[in-house]
Image 1 (cartoon, rainbow over the protein chains, first blue to last red):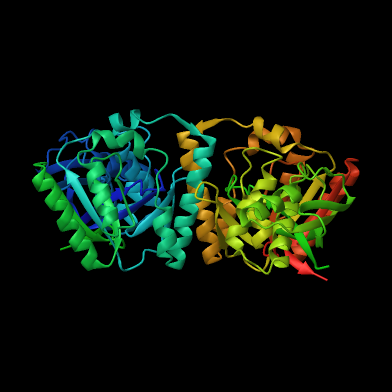
Image 2 (tube, each protein chain N blue to C red; image 1 turned 90 degrees about the vertical axis):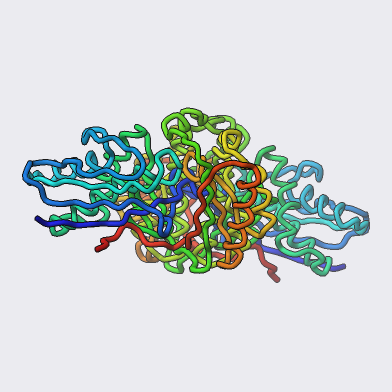
Length: 307
Length: 307
């Protein structure tokens, strides 16, 4: 029996100025996917632990993704997937993407890497698309590539790894309530003003330029979301309070990850990041809102094999 | 009598993926503005040559811009402006912006530079805004700063000079018909799909990244306009034919400058640019469409003093 075991990270998507197109991996928080050869053809689900996920292989993101890749390669071998599901579904930090990516990455490994990394994304997306029919690939690309990624969803999921300054950290708070991505997406406006679009174009352009030139002042000014944040803040506990505190404590931004309810700050220097995390933790504790919180470098590894 | 004479360049705006936010100066094609002290307070118009422009100082972009700056500085001296108007109004290559920028730049010079460059933009915009109430600042910023610029119209006209690779040239064709910017803007959709917006975000982000990394393949893929080009092509002579020829001759893009009717290609290497200009010139000649055409490095100087 052959076996490949991988760690596939959670991720922040919709990074402020990059609705559906910018994301980054979270260090140390992710699903563990173990793929083994099996005596029945196709992809099967084995041991599922942690948060509850579908045990029917036709509805599980990991098995759907892996099966689509197996079909493409026209391989009739059998595999079984064990999943340690550590990322809460509906948390807004790429729970389904992590499982999909982990499954296709492990399958590619066990098969001797017949596909390149950029080819894996469309199969991982087959898993992602069962939770939301119009899912963008920012979480999948983040979990697969690691670091800060730009994805062009419209040109065959073209991914660009962006420079992520070493001393930028993300502080993430996840209020423990579940938001369905598909429902949250249906609350968004179908159309936006052309002026607002142009505004958002200048913000993302400034952000990409600031990253390439480590211009933190421009970065701070550019990390703005005129498109969807205002539609979602009301459903997110403590958003306004946490945002005010975050910005008062020299963060570069505070915004919603994915469809929420997780929110994140980006902040320069690890000590400031630790401090900010503690301060916002305290706000959640005092407000009696249950939560998880994470601290991660902006540049964190994507999916990788573990022993 | 003191006198300052400046050359203020034409410019290409709406650079493909950067609707209202990206522009660049055109080398060697521009207005010549001469500002002299005068014995009556305020800004006056003197000798106007070349293309016809308003001779009432309340309706001339140059005098309106200069007067707004004089008012801000609370200066009661008198100045007279001579304009050699070389850029055809309504050509889509920043005719009014060139005059506005030339006037405020010359005024700042003659006054001993009381204002910094970034402060001049809002006064130049006072001139620009008489032709269109919602004019963006991409032409003004290009003429003022030179090179390839990114402007955030919504945050106080914040301008970022982008890297412009030395070996990229622009080939510009201007069919000799006039299009009013205000009318052309009213034909645009007020709203765009959120998906289209997100698509355009990925293109401009890729473009800015490609510039910073001289990644010409990504540049070629990113120089796309999903927002307005399709609304305007029908009113532009030879657009589809010229675009096909441009792309067949290894240009990075072919799109509309400003509101049109001028169109431009970006292309790597001067010899290829010269060749492309000749080929498209021939198409215009054979089709009996009167035109002007220009060749310019992407990185060209902005407004500057001449003797």
